Image 1: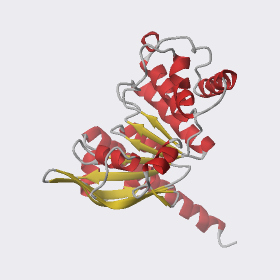
Image 2: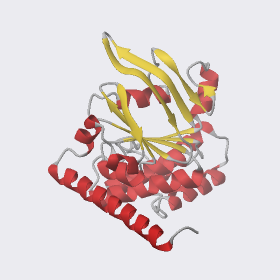
Image 3: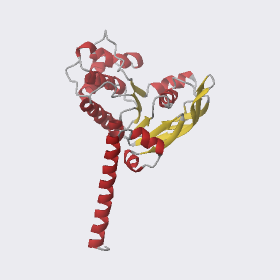
Image 4: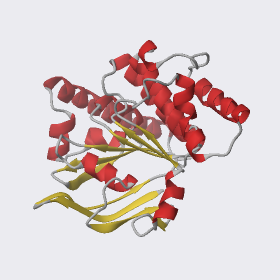
Length: 271
C-alpha cells in the first residue's frame, strides 16, 4: 500500500499539485487520470521520487519515503518496477539482455539463475522464444510486454505504468490491460497506472483518482464512474456524444438489473 498525505508540488510560481491525499491499494490497479496539465504525471513522479514534494508525505507500507535517507531509498527502489511510456528498451540489447538488466544491476545471481528468471518472466508475458530478438524486430505490443517483463523480473511489491497503451491499437491495448491486471493480482503488487486510455479506466480501474487543475477532483472505481455526478469527471470521461450515449445505456441496464432483482426478491418473499 502507498499512502499520499497532503502533497503539494510547484514549479516557480505555479502550484501543480495542491494538497492531494490518497491511498493506493495493494493487489489492485490504481489509476491516475486527468487531462494534460492536470498534474497526474507530476504526482506519479513525486510518488516514485523523481520529484521531491514541497510539502506532505509519501509512505510505502507505512514507511515514510519522504524522510528516508539515500541508502534506504535505494533499497526501496529495488522493490519498484517501472513500465515507461515508450517502453524505454535498449536498442542495442536483445530482449533477453533488456530483461536481464535489472538482475545485473541489483542482484548477485549467477548467469544460470539470471537466465532462468528471464525465461520465467518472458513466459509470463507470452514471449517465450523471443530472447534473441532486438527491439527493432518486434511489434509495439511486444515491446510493451518486454517492458513489463523487465519491470517484474525483480519481483517488485510496487509497479508503476506510465501510459502503458500509448501508441497501441485498441485490441493490443486490451491485451496489455489484461496482463497488467493479471500480474497485479498474481504478484500481490500495488500497481499505479497513469493513463489517458478510457478503455483502461473501464477495464482495470479498481481504484481511480481523477486529477483536475492540481486537485484530486474525484476518486472511486470503474463502476462508480458510470453513476458519478461530478461535472468535471463526466466532461473528461464522456467527452463525446457516443461515450455519453454509452454511459446512458449502461445506467439504464444497471437500473434495469436492480429493478429485476427487486422484483425477484418480492416474488420469492422473505426467507
